[in-house]
Amino acid sequence: MPLVTDVLRLAVVVSLLLPAGVLAGLVENHSSPPVALASIALGISSSDDLEVLARAAGNQRRYDEAATYYRGARALSPRAPFYTFALAIALGDAGRCDEARSEYEHGRGLSAPLGTGTAPEVERSAARAVDWCADLGE
Image 1 (cartoon, rainbow, N blue to C red):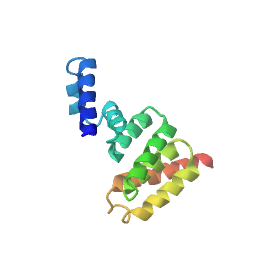
Image 2 (spheres, rainbow, N blue to C red):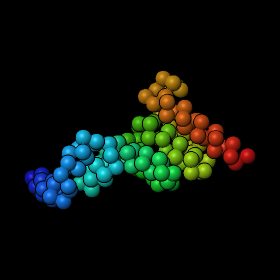
Image 3 (cartoon, one colour):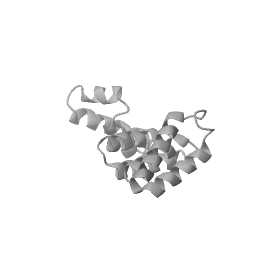
Image 4 (cartoon, one colour):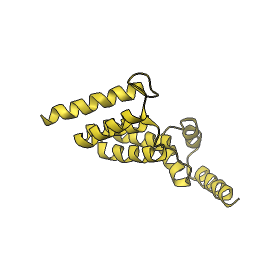
């Protein structure tokens, strides 16, 4: 029961500190970075929470940070090729081509043939990111 008590205490504190309507907005938009951070802080995070943070970092061109979050997501869901391919994309965007190719190849080992797996779009995007990164090095 201590965890339940701690969560209830946190909920009361948060509701007192946030302006009216903000908490409701956070709950409605459960895929926002603040909600992901709160999940992590409460110890109830998932790969999806880390992916939200990775996307936010990538959108701000903080590709190394995005790669760090995707590594964490992959560690929590090692059999899910999506996070491995997303990591390859972030590494490619960061110019870390050898690591990007390695992660892409690892993801290919986790998934079905291109276009038939659980993440065909992200797999194709990872292949493009790795090729683009390699073209920059030439």
